Structure formats: C-alpha cells, structure tokens
Image (tube, helix red, strand yellow):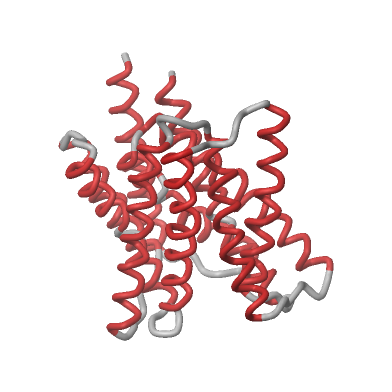
Length: 287
C-alpha cells in the first residue's frame, strides 16, 4: 500500500507540474517577466511552507542536510531553469522538451552508480517506453548545437537534484525539504528580480494565473514529488514524472485549441503503459 501511495503522489506531482506551462503562458502574456514570476512563485510558497512547519511544530533542517537542501534549491532548481530558459533562444520548444526528458535515463545511470540501485528488465522496459513516449508527445523542431548542449545540461542538473533529493529525504519530511528548497530558490530569484527590475501582471487574469502557479505548479507539485521520491526511489519517480508532458499537451488542447495528432496520442499511450508496468512491478514487490 505504501508503494501505491508513493506512485499516486508522483502522479499528482506530474499532473501539477504539467500546469506550469499553461499558467506561465497567461502570466507572461499579462506583462510579467520570468524572474519576477519565479521570485513570487518561490517566495510566496516559502512563506506558506514555513507557516506549515510552525503549525506542525516541525524543526528546521540543520547541518549537512540543510546545506544539501539549499544546494537543491539555489543550484538545482535555479541552474536547471536558467539553462532551460537560455536554451529557448537557440532551439525550438519541442526539441527542448524532447531533450529535457532524457533526465529519467540520467537519473537511472546516476542511481545505479551512486545509490547501488538494482538494474531490472522492468525498469529498463519502462525507461525506454517513457523516453520514447515523451519524444512522441512533443514536436521536436530544430535547434543550434549550443541550445542542445544547454538543455542536455539542464536535464543533467535536474537528474542530480533528484538523486541528491532521494538521499536527503531519508532524513527530513516533505514539508521541511520543500520549505528550504523554496526559500533558497526564492532568494536567488529575488536577487535576479531586483537586478533586472520588477514587472507585475497587468490584470486579474495574470494574478489568478500566478496564484495557480504557486498553489498547483509549486506547493503541490514539489511537495508531493519529494514525498513520493522517498517512497518509490529516484528512477521510478523520474519515469513516473514523464506523465507531465501528457497533462500539458491535453491542457493546451483544451484551453488553447492546440491540435492532438495521432503521434502525440501514441506517445501519451506509451507513457501510460510505462506507468502501469512500473506500478504493477512495485505493488508485486510489496506483496
């Protein structure tokens, strides 16, 4: 039952992360710049999570664990997002999305090397299905070599974030870890915002989208991911997270009228098959 809870938590996280691009489109279309949006996103989330810690009477992480969590936020999240946003100048959004979803493979390799994770045919099969599925879900387009290198680097940074997180989550709760990650990422984005200038939404639509980004794409998405990561492990969490582009594509089709091609649907189907294979294997192991 515990494994199923972990799988459900990661699925909720993936669905919540899938809303980020949707809310982002409304926010940026309403006059907000990326640094201001990310500062408010993580800053408000940090205040909320610290309040939760106080109400739950949970202590703040200390020592080596605190340092690792700060690194996850200030280096992991900030580094990944910087590389991701920079790569947009040199490659199509589709190609960026395709290369970013190489990260489950990187997580698998890092987990085998550093966490002594077992290599099984089930994991290899699910890994191949999830990566191929993510590739079919997006339209690759084209791009320059610099853009390709940047997004592969972003995938690597995010992979390290997940593997480090798997180790850290053995010592803290999802609320403790989320609070520090939000604070450290928010602090870096705060400095970037004040250096670049503050650009706020111009209407209620932008502010509502910003609220959605905070609640769904940040607080729910990251907290459930870290909680599920501790239960199912880094490789399974990374592969289950490939549900994210499926959610994004479906929401974009519903809200913006973007087309759903047979290839896109096939890609989504392969990801769902990978999720089912992993779920069955994990539940069987728990019996």
